Image (cartoon, rainbow, N blue to C red; front, side, top):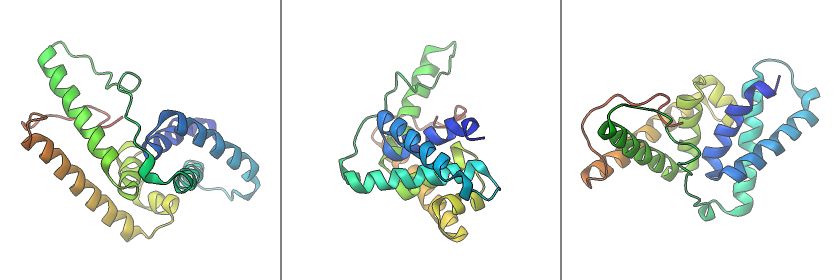
Length: 177
């Protein structure tokens, strides 16, 4: 039951910890906790239950390490867009935009980054996010709204500095992963 959610668990941990090695350790710890406490699981959505454990392990570790110390860069060689295009100019523009998006997302406070990753990458419902984060549904909606606004502003700042082309485009799927 838990193995099918490994990618989602790692994805959440990677974005919260901002470090691939830390994310792997978090997922391993979360799976051990899930196995130890499996008897307490009362049915329902196993994915949401596991992601809540992953989230809690992440925040426990971030509190221990002090979140301000976490500044590891995203490794583009491992998590490249994977999109192949015939036009090198288009490929370059997409790569620049994807890098700006990743950097902007990583700069968001954890509470905004968390809900954006769970909603946009993991496609969880607002209710599932509320259950995982242990926050009211209205807080999920407001954090998503504020997170999207901050992300949009950060991307506009990149465009104003000329770091990315501001012309409209179709976002590659998935938009961050």
